[in-house]
Picture 1 (cartoon, rainbow, N blue to C red):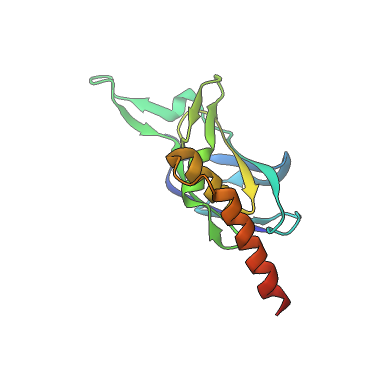
Picture 2 (cartoon, rainbow, N blue to C red):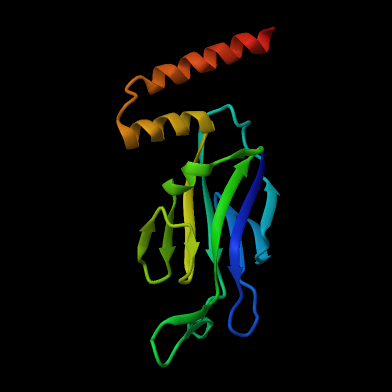
Length: 167
């Protein structure tokens, strides 16, 4: 499977250092380097039609207290090494709203559900559930409680795909 992670608003440290990240998929290191706007990699998994779960983690490795510059007069942050997760695509399909199922865990143990901002040192963790359509249907029902037949809808979709694949 092809994975592509996209970031935005990448801000260096006060000394010009770029954020350093490590990306793991089920605890296997896929990337360890300075952040770039786009990080592509491939994982050897079952095809994306079978049901499975994988843990994706993005760790912010080199943030130090010196990287946050605070105004002595106002106490406002005037400079900070940080960045934001924009998207994750799997085989070209955007996770979009599914990103919010992840969480940011700061090194001090504070958990920020649904946080895509890498400010404090820590890591973003998301349990990727495949196939994506099943995850989307389940999430929509969990949040909106308006589709009690989502599992049946998914089963019908699978049956239709199987019929079309035989033609």
